[in-house]
Image 1 (cartoon, rainbow, N blue to C red):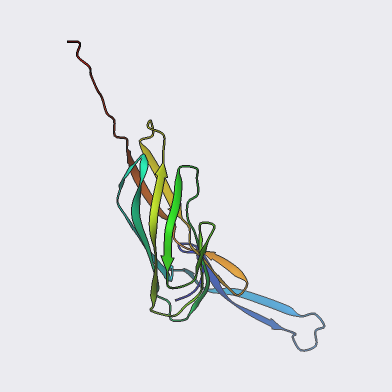
Image 2: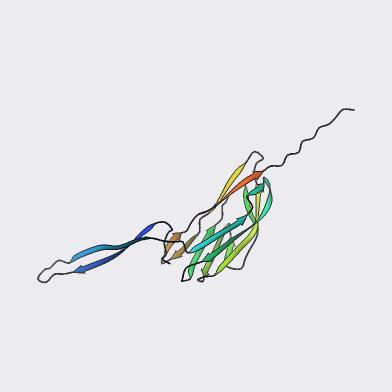
Amino acid sequence: TLLGTPDEHYDIVVRLSYIQEGEQDREQVVSRIISAPRDTPLLVDWQMGDFVLSQGSIPFSIHIENTASQPLQNIILPLSQSDEVQYQNIKTTTGEYTANVWTIPMLLPNTSTTLQGNLVTKFSSSAHNSTLEILPTHRANNTNFPQEKITKSLTIISPTLETRAKNW
């Protein structure tokens, strides 16, 4: 697997530098050999119901797998942040979760890990939909490589109670 940002094309080039006999100046020829898109080496599966209470809690899990043939280092998964959404009771066996960011120092080839917890919602009763996003990145050769964005669309349910009194 070649590292890079998914769906972007990267040119692989050959560079030939030479000085012809009897010449002083160096000549250089650059030629593109291949242009190829990069696949994402991280498979991310975000499990959670599609319906949430406006004021409630729902369990979730985020499962990450390294499909690359080499270890991936410095994986970062920032979770959506807002006043309406909080993450509680977070557990993981790999890495660290701090301030809505899951960091994994290294994930070996063909291995996976999971983050679990509860999504606590505090939406207004007039809210109907919300979208949460995760944009995982990993760092290699002092470069951050954004991976495929994961989007979770939520339908917000606001229970109502109506009472009527009858005069006797």
